[in-house]
Amino acid sequence: MTKQIPNLFTLLNLVFGCLAIVVTLQNGIIIQYASDGTQLIDIPEKIWMAAFFIGLAALVDFLDGFVARLFKASSEMGKQLDSLADVVSFGVAPSMILYQFLRMSLAREEDGLNASIIWLVPAFVLAAAGAWRLARFNLDDSQSFGFKGVPIPAIGLLVASLPLIYWNNQTQFIVEILFNKWSLYGLIVLLSWLMVSNLPMMALKFKDYSLKSNLPKIILLATGIITALLFSWLAVPVVFIVYIILSLLLKQR
Image 1 (cartoon, rainbow, N blue to C red):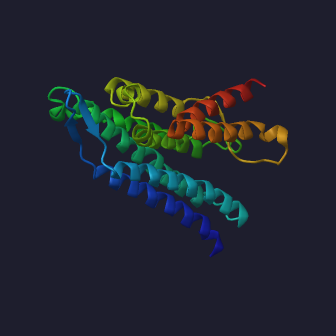
Image 2 (tube, rainbow, N blue to C red):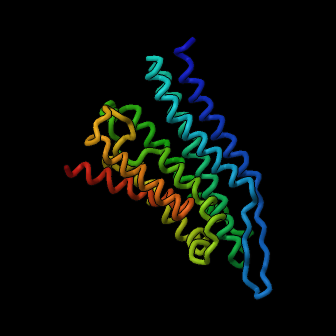
Image 3 (cartoon, rainbow, N blue to C red):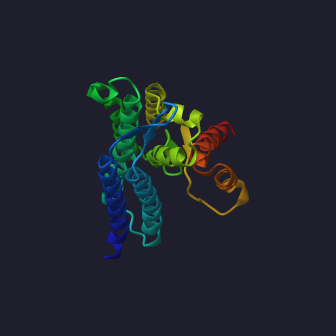
């Protein structure tokens, strides 16, 4: 029975991913106009809940591996189940968030609410790239303590931070970036490429407890804490960028 405990954590990851999709789909678009004629777009509260559920999915995704090692219950079934859960929680659910952001970006344009669905389809390129990356990972035994391409949970968390960044940093600059369809398309292409690329990425696992081998992880943690205190949810993209830089620097050593 204990051998199934890690799989229960993995299934919980999947449940959180499904909940994230549900609350994202329940959002509408509220467009208002200020007294000076400025167009204001409101993101209904439920999309914030999607970010919350993706965060919970990431937490249990981290814990299932830890629990599997604790109970010595690693299995091929667990590996496959983990990938299936990840593609939903960190592929499909973030794609739905991007889908809603694209809808809101189009809503700012004249007759944008009647725009063709073709303009929204690119949101799901992220999910497709995530599925490709996970399938490749399952066939590659060389990625135990390092990855080829950015792991899909990192991509999912980055996208999940977008509605939180909007709510906490409603400056004109941030709004223009988040609700510009071309910047969103560019983000989708970049994140999809990062997943399917062969860039060497470090795993956040501890092989030992020496300072030297864990220094990059400590730097990443310190960066997250400091930037969170200074910039709130903008810390997520900052940590994401630092993670990529540290991984590439480690490869050069």
